Image 1: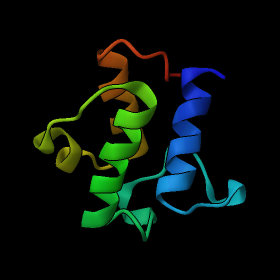
Image 2: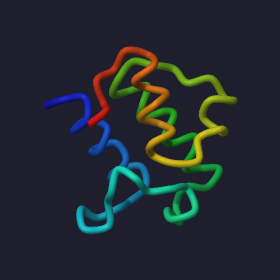
Image 3: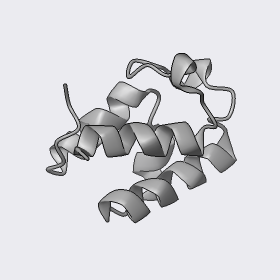
Length: 81
């Protein structure tokens, strides 16, 4: 499984999204479950899957899946297109 596929799996699981609802360009405003609990769940999911521990300010600054992709790419994970 590629890092990008792993990321998709985490996002589907954390935000309770169906395959048909998912796009890699979704924003926080488009995901009802991306609330304060969703931020914590996302940080935990990223840590469990990739071993990267997001700083609280990184997690709360994310406004879209592309933001998350940029963060993980900058940390050396191959999650970009």
